[in-house]
Image (cartoon, rainbow, N blue to C red):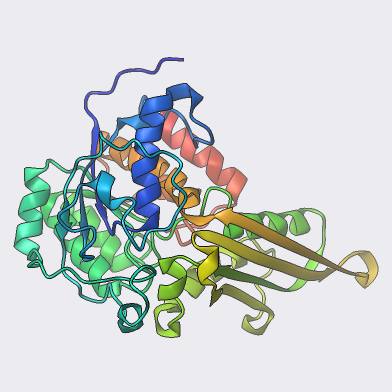
Length: 370
């Protein structure tokens, strides 16, 4: 199958070259190598753009094992531990540049073994003006944010850089930008698109939990209480072992499920979020989902599901969709939050839409325009 040629590749920078970035870097090269034979591609063609049309031109990171390397080299550098599903990354020669630390590195990360946590580079961090200049020099069109959960200051710093440089943003983590009215207005004023916040994985715990909640509603089941407990062994789970970094993550995941309920549950009847760090799991995430409720006449029922998945390719698949949607928004001269493109991909979008409806909305956006 062929697709309409695009005018130019989608020049993309990655902020945070961790496990999700590794899967994204591998994924771009994998899709280029295998084309229509690539497995598990979400939306193979969007307005003529395929995943292979994404061109990763640079990354920003703080780790000494990544700064100064190419993206292809950094993809497999420690502490990254995700599955290596495509190792020929000779085409991924964009540089990894030294960004500022800000709050991107929690103190407890530096106290853990080097193969599982961060080690700061002694290279001088680029200033805001230097990053803005670099984005312009690279002709960057899209910034993909994959910083650690809880990096409020760091995300806002890079978002400001993108606004000044006129670069669209895809915010993959639970720092609220697209869904925050002040930031949304800043993007509108700057004439720049923003997509976010916090990816729903391709087949992850949130989309599974929402589907079960929707099924209960459709079948007339009264859900009384629910939980979703997640464990994993990558740097994301180690980072989130500090509760102070989890406020937005819990809100994002909880709201994504509450939005799928016919009636919102009391806060004491719903618990969702990371629960433990298990190093030997590496990039595997194991999610335990339970819903308790009542059938006809008040008869009791409950559902228990265990999901075991490689975490980072699950996010990278949706990143390849979001980057292309950001380019489509740029092509059309759109600015601010692209709500039609957000509800299907993100846990905390500007507007929550039921998933099957959101799928139709995003396709209409692509095929017919806003």
